[in-house]
Image 1 (cartoon, rainbow, N blue to C red):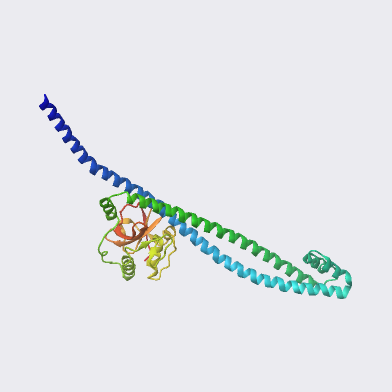
Image 2 (cartoon, one colour):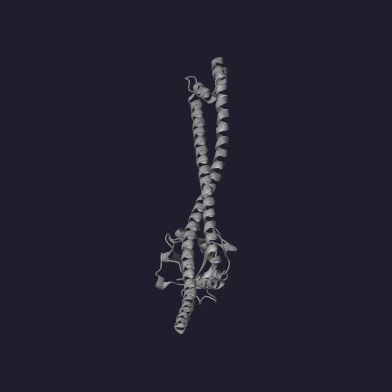
Length: 326
């Protein structure tokens, strides 16, 4: 009886060890899979934020240029109004000299001199030339008021855009910090496995489709390992569209700082006909762009966790399409 109990206990212990041995790797695999899925979601959300950040930045830059032009126009228009005001005043005073004290009384006792000038210069005693001068003065004032309203509206637009950028930056930082926490919870072995999924070593394949494509690919490959930063356009950190924009600038092609805007350029290319130098796009919108470098590989400014990477076109991000510009 005792021997039978010992046998049962031994078998139970053996089963427990087998179960633990199986659960350990399986639990680690599940943990890594969960981390991978969460990081993929965070990176998609970060790409959407980065894309909007660039669009708002472009809008803000345009508004600031518009404001500078309006400020200059207001300065010039104010000079014109002041000059015409002086001329109108001289004509009104001339009416005093020609027709008595009643006109000057109107001018200098009125709370609104512009209204007084109008009353004086619209009398039958005033020449058509004087009336034309008054009308020119009044029109110039209206134009000045319109410019000031445009100035106020543009200033308000700039404040809204700056506030939106600050909000986007804060949200992006939260995504980055959450991604760091996800990675930090993994073991060193799991982190190494995760990194291996989004990095390749070696040089890109030879570029068969011309010197311009070669220049773009060579420039991109030389920057693998550099930092990612939202809104970045180089020379030491980029976001995705800032990276492609900088790459194409080396061959004299100017691209907008936006993945969705770049997606509207060039002509569409099927995935099975990609050539080095083609722009490849990911996520809805699209929200991310990289450079195809041949051999099924791309180089892109991926995110703040990985920076600029040389990796498979199928490494995690949902593919949207490609455009050929050269």
